[in-house]
Length: 221
Image 1 (cartoon, rainbow, N blue to C red):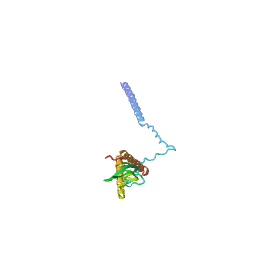
Image 2: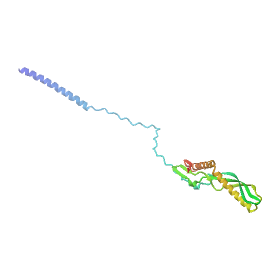
Image 3: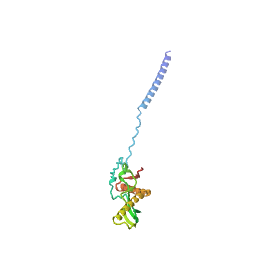
């Protein structure tokens, strides 16, 4: 009986030692895994700039363009000829009062220089920086037609002295009025004179004063 108990104690001791050894093995394995040092990852160095590298200049906002002073178009340089001049010829007759000897008359052939110009005092100007939009009226007759050639092609010999002079003056005034009316009714001629003035003014504002862009349009009534 005592021998049987001894065998049981021996077996129990062996089992206990086995369990205890297994526990020690498991604990030792976990401890090693926890205390394992992580392999450090080396940091990559920053790239080295090549010897020829030139850093980009800092970005700078473009400077606003300098505004060009707007000229007073009413005081434009007389050397900038915006008007066009051309000769116009007409024939006119002035008749005197009826008398016993018939009706006195005088006929003149008059060539006068006509000047067509644009009224710059009526300019409508819109500005965007150094860009201009200008609206101007169409060209009109500037001043009186200037006679450059007068020829008497027919007259009554019954007029004498001051009568002849008065008749010639009347005929000349009548010729001027006829020339003005003829030019004013010639829309094609008015358009040509207007375009010439517009383009000359545009070139002067751009080439001489430095405006970047100039557009001139007619004022629509």
